[in-house]
Length: 164
Image: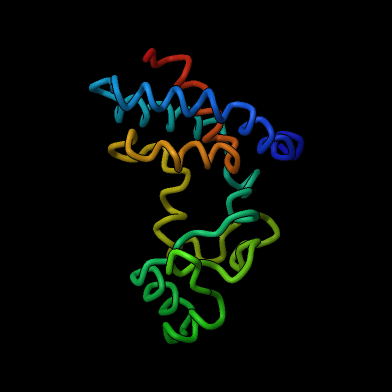
């Protein structure tokens, strides 16, 4: 897994132009059952892939925190929302709440999430490869191929299965 992670950004960069073209064609000529196919690809990949072996998303990037996330997590941690914000979050250039630093403060050494039951919506949905209206998030998906080996594998399998 470690070697796979080390060269993932480079492999994703090598495929970037190819992936942009594929997703551009996919938006123009979208299969009617694209969301179903993506759900299938996602489930197949995650039957083989364990996030606990990787946790690269938690180590290298941070999620956006919605107000609902902040309320839920601060309650879980027995903090006031403002205390949680001051202790863990900052506002980014898009005016969104994000982690002050990565790796995530809630990532344990064994790759388990210390707030898993109440984790942010963005974490629950990552890498977003089983999302409805999948065709609308192609830029996010391409970005995620450099972070998540499963997302990379799903996109590669998509290109093999879905002819545009």
